[in-house]
Length: 449
Image 1: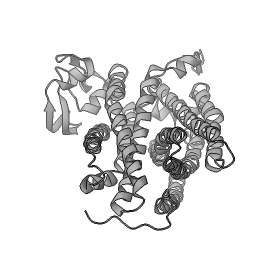
Image 2 (image 1 turned 45 degrees about the vertical axis):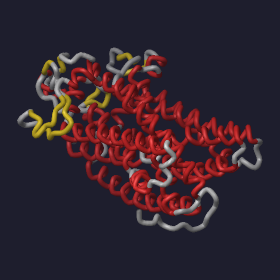
Image 3 (image 1 turned 90 degrees about the vertical axis):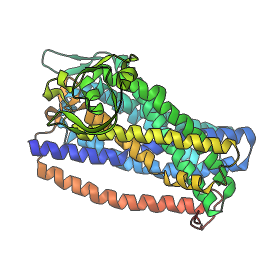
Image 4 (image 1 turned 120 degrees about the vertical axis):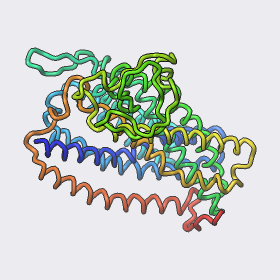
């Protein structure tokens, strides 16, 4: 059973990681598309209409990929994680059903109207479809986050005499304090991804010397939105999410920070390598007392280390958790620095002619995806060894009827199918970028800086 559990975890980790490459862009683009359509309606500037059409196509491709890769995860709840579904279906079934019936259908229906109804609808009606896509996308995101937040910090449930978990408070589930901050953090991260993608495409056009009007538009919007979203990632959303972990999952906080010993005036580790066997952080670079201040707003506050908890309450892969967390934080800091410099250059009117900075904006495109992946790894690895924190251990939720061999078979199938889907996705996105907002059929590569 232990071997099968490893395969089940590996399969779900792969499918959910691959899937989330797409929703993080669609959720962020939904906001930027709505703002573009609003600006187009206000000004009548055809550039905004063209830009909205261009990004709507990118949105549509990502949306389709998100749907195709999201459906298998629903089936995995019933196959690989059948015991988990049976135990908590009466709780998380509400939010997952609402996400599918209300938010997803709303988003997909109005996306069709947005993509193909511009010539048939009035300008205000077409703007309303953009609003509906935005609302559906962000409502869908909230319901998924609310589901995950209950697994991180279960509230609103009851356990009957037979040990079954039921939902005692629907609004307690929906308004979980953990969900509110996790949602804000997740959605601002999606805007970071969309902003970097938009800025990268604009930088590509400027470096290539074609479609420069839209290139400037994309860079300007991407930099401004990216700066705001990067700030929100750090404060208040990241700060408040960190405090939630400190209060409700203190072993996770200790593992994230590589803090093995309880200490007053705990330092913040900028870098280091956790040695779990020796229970120490090797080669650390520390900021004295900073962790105590960031966590409890007091320089000498006592922060619990892993020594304060039984080892079976520790996350089961401390090095992975530690490095995922530090990659997320490190990249988030670099995002803010890059967008701040770009915004400063934009304000001075020198960004569009600064080729080194344009190259940086273009080459930065994949890193928000890395940061988002590292962030979700931090959340999910940090929750271990629990499926539902404090209620259900991970090994208790796996299906006992699906063998390790069956898990490997389906995992290899996913790997093959997703490889083909990846090639198709990249080809379709390339075709759209090559054509550009103005419908250009061909484009040159960027010239050397």
